Length: 379
Image (spheres, rainbow, N blue to C red):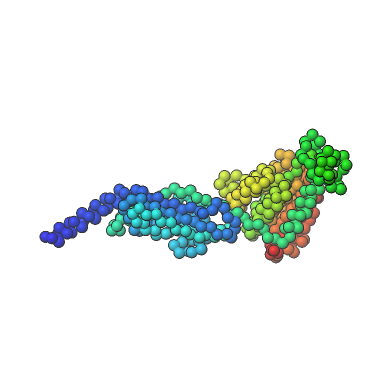
């Protein structure tokens, strides 16, 4: 008799436990994952924190947290990780009553991009492992992995030449009605610019400065098009790194920069167009756009993009075309654009085994300076 009573009591306890867990297992349960930083560069590490908070008296002894991420963000510790088309994480994080558990996962950004964790799935069970409970949580965390700076050996030399061309072609006529300030005299200054009053006060020659009648800027055309059967995506990625170099280096010299590409934004699905700007804020905008640039075979011909910009009257600046793709249509469109530009260069990343063909194809398209940059020649 006592055995029957004991079994009945156990069954009643089980049923009561199941009823309580059915109703309250997710009460007070909060689950989230968050990147410790908002941006890193290619090859850098970042911490992803998993947080589970159980604000109730019921323990969750078999709570499993599941979420997915692009495979280019690689975990340092690969336990509980499954990599296929995506990267799937399954972590068992048991939580006691009124307990908060935080785990730190270290990842490496192996490729530039925009990475996010938008949803988390949670799987739990009751104390007796009789029932399985599943819930999906909305999550908001994202990370920009900026393209690294290109280490192509000849790139600094190319920058110096293009910057020199910018200085040479910049309009030097000044507007006498737009006073900018006063600076020290140099032998190149005409005597009519000398501010005699300020010179007398300071004891050294000073000259007046005025704003230019027109402002020059740099336009970068970034081509991610590939027509050949053999796709060289590494050359496209290097083109994106080169773009970062030119953006940062010219902006730091005080030159406004515009970036135009036939590649699309991963979030907006629109072609990349970054208007003219300068300063650290503009560099940050450019790096975010370059991180979100999606490369694929389905892009417009760069020749059409360049002709559109010419029709809009934007061919008055120093221009750099960064393109691993080289074809007659692109060359013709850029040559036509360059006729109205203050100076133009074409940067073409190639591999060592492509050098012979590159030398045979090397041309000068009017006033366009063409430069082949070998990927294997890094600093």
